[in-house]
Image 1 (cartoon, rainbow, N blue to C red):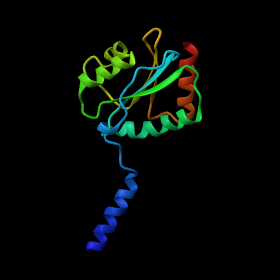
Image 2: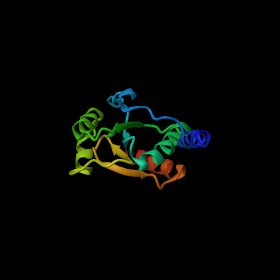
Image 3: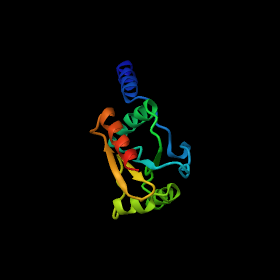
Image 4: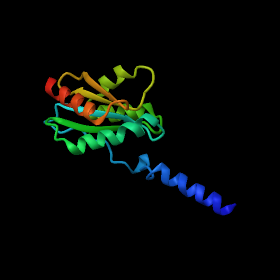
Length: 145
């Protein structure tokens, strides 16, 4: 019986994939570079199923493409701390856009494409989109800038 439980636990752990990096070990949010036109902001939390589906797609798109004038950032909401979330948004220069998008409650699991000149969200990406659609959305947002 112990062997069965140990094998079941090992199979479950393997199926879950790699351990996630705790929020405390993630890189701090820094302001985008001066030549950034569009900031692709992922509203993320470790406990969010949509985030777990979207994040690998965004990373694959980012690795496979050189988007001129586009920078990627993640705002971590794992701790459900709205003040920290909006402080990070302020650092990124997108606090007004994020506050307008989340007037009552921060939601996770979406990539927001923010035009830094206008401060407006010019596109969104969600987990239902494949990598080609994500690439197209980012390319379109960059073209609008």
